Image (cartoon, rainbow, N blue to C red):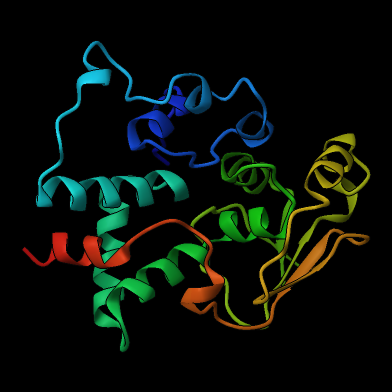
Length: 208
């Protein structure tokens, strides 16, 4: 499955804000966004004011990078969101939030979405008792997500839970940190999705 493998801190600098792609580093003084708060590249400090189209494009790029999806996959999510009854922009964010790798991250079993994706790909995750290693798998209300039994004793997960212990778990999820499991209790509302994305700009971009 294709994925971005370049330097992720450049992505945050390009968007001009932290996208929290590096886990612990994003909260440390070493974060490049704090040290160099301008776009990467030779002319990064001389960026011109964005046009309306530029603002819409940047918002789409930001959403793609936060959730770790590429262009075609993101376009497919938008098409599905557009077909679904309701507000298209909110439907889009809901689909992205219900990806398995994002749910693992939200539950605190990955310090970043990238690490959560790796946890899924390395066969550490069970959904309703069955192994699922597809990061884009769409979870549903009532699904139980857990770290498989023989992985729970790994030092890796002890370190992850210690690091993410203070992270708030969204209201639409129920986490059991002692047993390294969680449950989808509801579909997330827009006010329960704490990403700095103006989804209306993305809808405007695809509506052109």
